[in-house]
Image 1 (cartoon, one colour):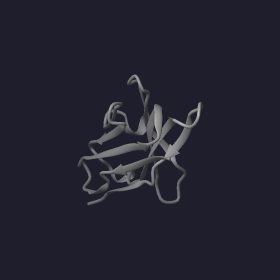
Image 2 (cartoon, rainbow, N blue to C red):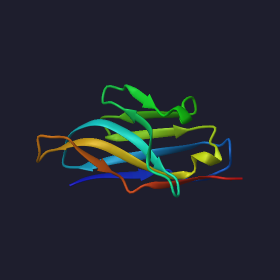
Image 3 (cartoon, rainbow, N blue to C red):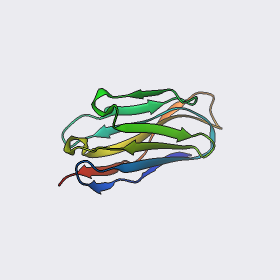
Image 4 (cartoon, rainbow, N blue to C red):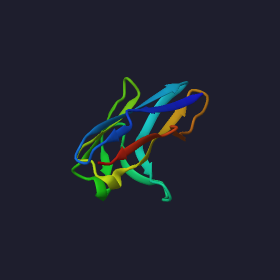
Length: 121
């Protein structure tokens, strides 16, 4: 009933840039915090950045100053602009959203399917 779909992943050389997008759809009443997480091969999923509905942001120390999270509430979209990419940024990137559907009164956590980002020369 609620779906999050990421796009924009791919392969890039070190120092390059990518922009990830995540679209929320379905029977959505409202969306709270949205965020990006990543999981490298063999590692646990980790927080990259979050953004509240009123635009407050939080970033992992490893990407501060290089990545920027933003959202468009009207379009139900969240974005991650990634600059100065490093090989250690290689991972599957997942979109997450706290969503209240029209059928429920509480917010539930939803995840996208993930998009691969590979940084390599």
